Image 1 (cartoon, rainbow over the protein chains, first blue to last red):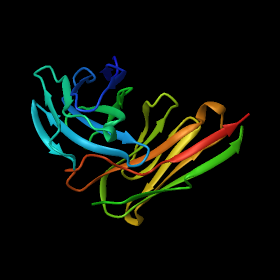
Image 2 (image 1 turned 45 degrees about the vertical axis):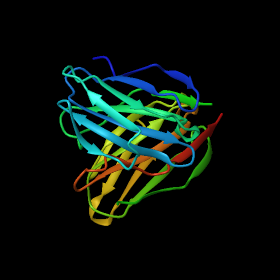
Image 3 (image 1 turned 180 degrees about the vertical axis):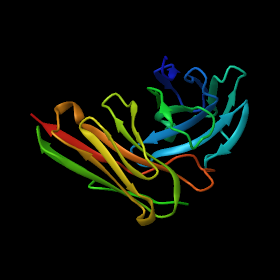
Image 4 (image 1 turned 30 degrees about the horizontal axis):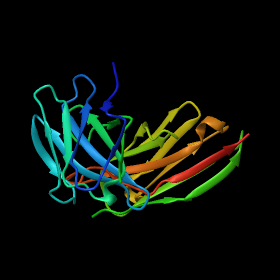
Length: 113
Length: 110
């Protein structure tokens, strides 16, 4: 089976712009979670989607949003980018429950100038 | 929320050495995973181990849920074992996704 894929792998944006990141889970997996990794805060949970519905949400401002499509692919969007949004954004998929084994994609490295 | 502490934060070893990485957590968990993050940022799943002991080649892990800790053992280290090792847990409700520790940065020197 193919692993979790994320596109794009690298992205450079300027402050105030918005960005959309994409994640395709492992075939058959229905839960998709997003995480942000920064040197200062480490790995932090953003949100989780299951069957096109947001099931859980971390402690991030409303500028961070996401959605999931009927084929389980997910996108996350960050509006009005700030310098502090520069991070590695990781997507994880699991079979059904968020407590199942999580498999991570290679990540999207976002730089905000 | 639940707290996850990993030790040591940094570890430098020679090739062939053995090591033990520790993960302490502050509350009961229903999922604990160990990951290896490679230099390109990819998190590789090593073990799903909410309790008990598992082995996979040179790596093994033990979680003692009642005492709220987990150990990752790496034997006969190789340079390719270098990277950051993370412990991550789900607390009872799982409402906050995985909570990660700050990781152990392991460097294996040839």
